Length: 96
Image (cartoon, rainbow, N blue to C red):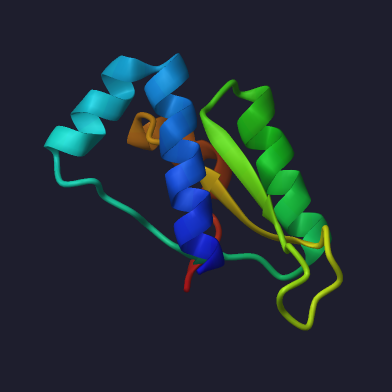
């Protein structure tokens, strides 16, 4: 569920800021790639790199409806954006 939230929130960000990227992504089948990080700190680092690169992105924080504390970062969405720009940030992460 957290990944779905991140995907949607990031796509909405792209739709507002980078409509051409969003339109290409939507017309091309809405590709999604899920990768994993080893820690909350690594998740936050990946998100900060995406934001610094000015890519559409979103950080999802737990709402307190699970066993995690409310506000705990759980997932980040990046893109849609050109593959090379996302790969520069996430390319070394392992697929989930």
